[in-house]
Length: 112
Image 1 (cartoon, one colour):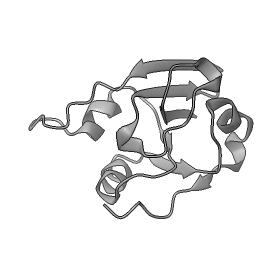
Image 2 (spheres, helix red, strand yellow):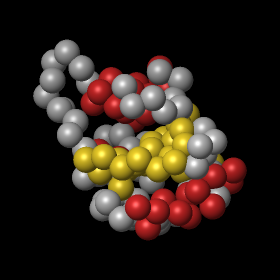
Image 3 (cartoon, one colour):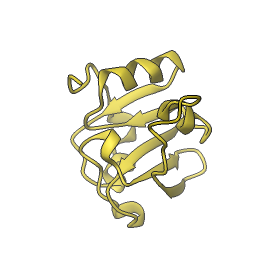
């Protein structure tokens, strides 16, 4: 599994999870097969008429996302791309990795 994680800081496996997907200053991708972590700055262009933020992220080649909260429009766009949305009560990347098989499917968004 390659899981995209919105994070608040670039502190490797101790990076804090962003409480809301769209407000994350950074993103991490963890590859559970390769045991590899990549962190990059959130440079999404929300006003690009040709490419939505979801389309911009898809180029990073992941198949699931861990979120604490996310808008319904983004949920729908990710589901259209067959990206699984996962959640749980974890605060840093290492906790997600330690519990990767216990992540729950995200049922609904935050309402906006």
